Image (tube, rainbow, N blue to C red):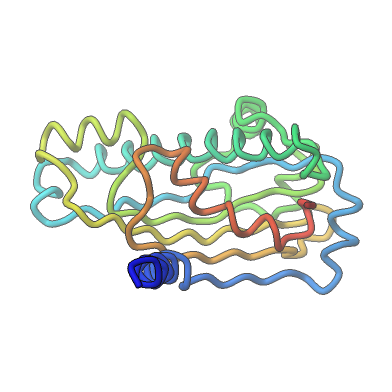
Length: 214
């Protein structure tokens, strides 16, 4: 009886965390993925949704900086996550390093935090890749070290409830075609840092997108 109750509770928690997920895969996704040699990870457009009590402790410039820190931290976390899959032979393409991606974009005069103002084909030409991963991320609790430390010290914490909304796109840069769109809303269970967050966001989707194999 105890085991049954525990199983039901565990199922409820899993559903609460993972049920709000939407995934689109292009009908010709396998063909796009098979012809993709290199993927670049563009910094996500991040919004940190602070509570009114927290907002009064920051200037608008500080909030923007907090979002940028979070964006770069997530980019690095995603890169590490994809590298681990590549090492295990579960990723078809190579992943461009964030350092190279960001340097090439800046050299071309592109604001790395506003790359969505450009077509995927334009970014692909700058970066020399076949696919780019970009999108948006909203969170009630920043995970980057700089952002979380600053907010924690000034406000005394973030509250007990963590919430996040990720909208991630995989674009083919040769024809601007959206190959994968992944929308995930999470409440609770985000972990303590950006790598934990990426593990929660990505551990299910890679079993269902054409760029990875199992």
